[in-house]
Image 1 (cartoon, rainbow, N blue to C red):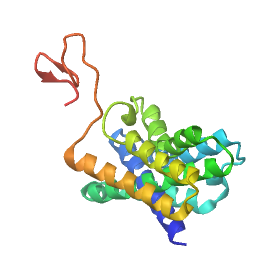
Image 2: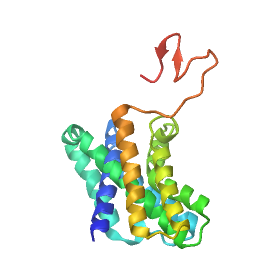
Image 3: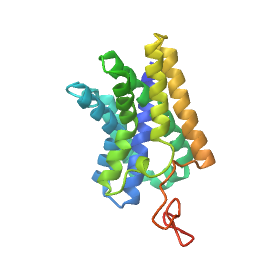
Image 4: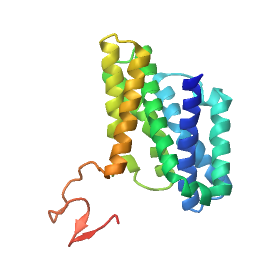
Length: 216
């Protein structure tokens, strides 16, 4: 029951992040709800499609759809208040990321997927919804251009796969993997860590040209 509640909390957090992005992009109420649903459920649907699970669990269990849809609607009507609570939303987002990645990796391993593929599927479960959100908004996915997000997800997935290889108890391993993801994500936000960026043609780093930072 606790894990189910935490999973719904993660879905709500992902839906809120997608809905806030939609509000900032000036989408209508339908667009806000759709983007919230996509962000919250997209990663799980991609996971199930890759694993051959039909229909995807997110489309069978009505609470997932209900929580994501209601969250999108709440953000649409009360987005100024949600913006003030954005730090709390980011915390819930980190928790949701940890839960989704470890659950996705565990599911893949149980279905006989090789460990390396299970890690990639678990990572996709956590970051897939956000990537789809950015694509719908015609942006380069955030996980591909800045912040320690996908890297944290992959580290947690590796912990789960390693625990399965060593035949350790799955629940404690999943909790450790989730805690690692949440911890890395929160520290990265606090310390403003970003993944390395290649130097440009002028030899500058992180998009600096003539001393000016391109991405603000």
